Amino acid sequence: MAKKANRPTSPAVPAAPSRRFSFWFLVPVLLVIGLVAAVLAVGWQREDDALREADATAPEMVLVPGGTFWMGRENGPADESPVHEVTVGPFQMDATEVTVGQFAAFVKATGYVTVAERPFDERKYPNAPLEFRKPGSAVFVPMDVPVHGPWDTPTPPWWRYVPGANWRRPEGPQSSVKGKKNYPAVQIAWEDAGAYAQWAGKRLPTEAEWEWAARGGLDRKPYCWGDAKPGEGGKWYANAYQGKFPAEDTGADGFIGLAPVKSFPPNGYGLYDMSGNAWEWCSDWYDPKYYAVSPKDNPKGPESGPPVEGEFQPQKVRRGGSFLCDDSYCHRYVPSARDKNPTDSSANHTGFRCVK
Image 1 (cartoon, rainbow, N blue to C red):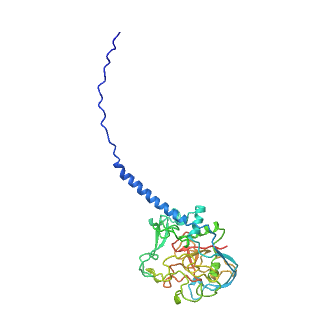
Image 2: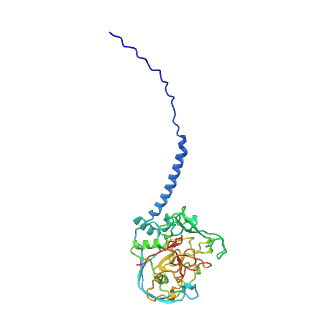
Image 3: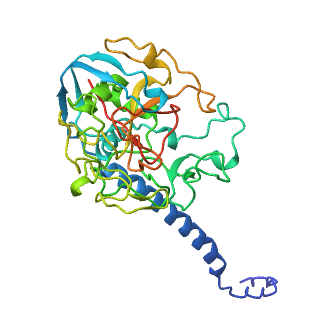
């Protein structure tokens, strides 16, 4: 038998040294990822907190009878003159300001994004400072400064533009509407109010309708409830500001800041908060001289409004005052008082109610 040939063997290859894979260098990366995830989770949680307040119950409405009244005020600001006779037809009006719960139901159903939540529009405001180029809105900040100036700012310094402020977080990113279903929805621009009204099959009131409704059948009275001054005899009729404005609201009326709707007695038509709490948008363009040419029957305001007070765009009417109205600075929680703002303006004291 033939013998097998011996085959040369390959030199032995030394075994590779064993290596232990270290994950320690990943720890900082994982920490950063976890932190980002936590921040996003908190943000989403706050978003969900707002929508969890959604209340699909149909808002209560009251019938406001038609009638004739004297609109405006003598010896008041120039834009409340001349006092003139106006007749309006009957209509239904929300008994309260549109609440957080009602507005959340609208957003939940439609996915609507409010003006304060949208990206900055450079075409409309090409010269805006950097601090105004993030989505946000105006927020009241208490401070001890002279009510009528002088100030270091061109506008009242107690108003600050706060990135991240919107109807979900009225005072900014750290705030929330959680548990505030029955509070007025604020940080609402005129465009937002109109979108809600259309979805609800309603509309915004005209300025004449609003004043007629606010008076509650008390023609030519100084307040929505009559003649008594707020706090007289220990009775409070509206949520306004007590204390030294703008430094401290003592909350003598029971509330510092916004109050839940129906916290004060209704007026003669069964309407709540027609004075104070939150400003309310009307459908009319603002013209300080409109009363001189206003028709008597169902006036709907001018076709457009002239830019006023340094604004480059027309403004819409707001009515009713807010929790920041104070006799030393803002006496506009009376039914005759007029105010205005651009259609894309919002603040933590501005809301609305609807009619149909």
